[in-house]
Length: 198
Figure 1 (tube, rainbow, N blue to C red):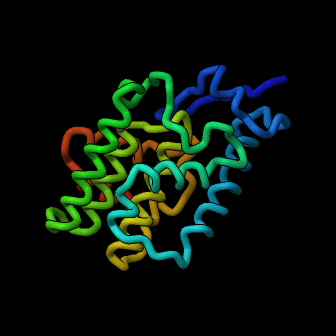
Figure 2: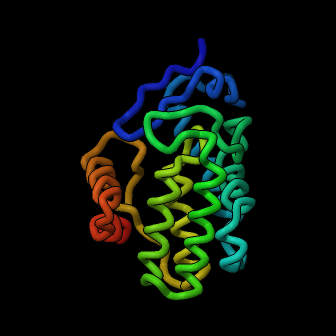
Figure 3: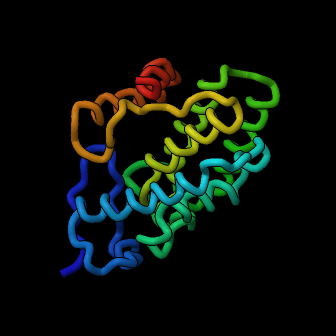
């Protein structure tokens, strides 16, 4: 039967080759996929809980990839691997390692020099990470979890609430989230900061 996905605004369509990386052949719909992915994400969150991570570890390529792998490894064979195709959003796939390295260096600088507030460092990092779009799927959820890890592990503050709801379905909440990302694209992070704490 195969995987038949309907995409909401802001979601990245998967190529057929990427769909072939699905590890659970009984999944055929987006709602089933979301359910299995969410179970895997909960396992990744459990892995993060109770662990200590310093800035050099968090702001590293292996950590970024390992977190994505832990979030999706039960569902996708390519979990944790940088994408090899261009998407409707994000940079050209071949530039991902360079842009990711630049972001990680910038974030370490922001942290070490207190360039921004703790919340703004986490949100700026999340925004740039999702803009790069490192992976074939799950970039939004991955970048939000990274922001949560940064704010909690590096600054001892509560994780973000992200509107208190799932952002994978087409709702007014998701529209607000997309609008806040678009505002951040223009250099205004206030809406995204406010949304993260809503």
